[in-house]
Amino acid sequence: MFDADPSDGVDEGKDDPAGSSYDLLWKYTTASNKIECFPLIQGDRVYFMSNDAYLYCLDADPSDGTDEGISDGSPVDAYDLIWKYNTGVTVLVSSPAILNGLLYVPVGTWLLCINATTGSFVWEKQLSLTAAIKSPIVMTDGTMYINNANRLSCLDLLTEGTFLWNFTFPQTVILDPAVGPEGGLYLGYLKALFSFGTNVAPLKPSAPLGPSEWPIGMPCTFNATSTDGDGDQLSYGWDWGDGSPIQWTGYYESGAVVDAIHIWGTLDRSRSR
Image 1 (cartoon, rainbow, N blue to C red):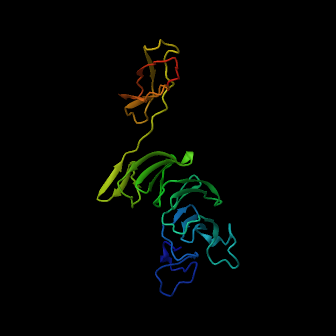
Image 2: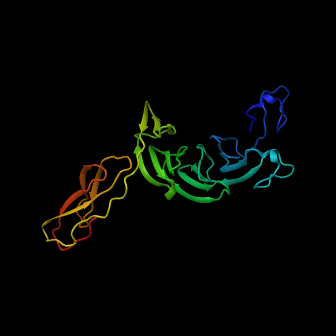
Image 3: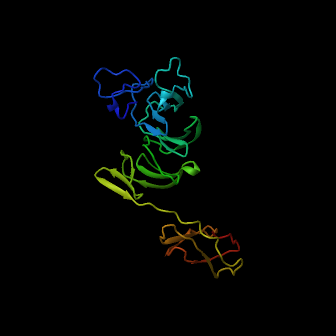
């Protein structure tokens, strides 16, 4: 940890060589000889991963002399280790992200959710079977964008990483995605830059409306409606419950009442949805 503005000439923290232009405040040495990902700073805490398999949490400013979390011994060697979590993986090359007090940690092919305050395990989800996943981006609405193998994925963190959508590339994606100020998502792949627009999912359609009884072999009409947060047109899929394929409609304006017609050939009148 360095003083961002050492121009005051005060040698804070560790003693630096005479004439040094930098000001080293503290350092923490792990059991591994490699740290291959960027640290994450949130408030007064620093989170980082090392190839000794641990995720670490340190006090960004231990100058108050209070030994928080794990005891650092006496005297305290400038740093203040709060907690560390054993991920079980010794090659950690992607950085964590944080949202609402929870850390989202890429570990090999898995995504771990860790309590940022206590370092305790919350949940985990396997995202890839072959390639290590990359550093994630988390949004304030609880969505996450992350590369896993040859896919760019959007996850819902509020439901423990449910996949919202995946975009598949021919080969493994190496770079991490970026989000622009307008909310657009950008990703470089081979010779191309891909741009993805944001999308607000439509509301769940209303329950289908139609008759409760009808003659066998005669067409029966049902209708439903939904609205889209972006005002996009919507297509409706009807599962008639009789083993026939899902019947998809054309595209209709958001909020339109959409009809669908079906003919049942037997007395087995399973509910439509």
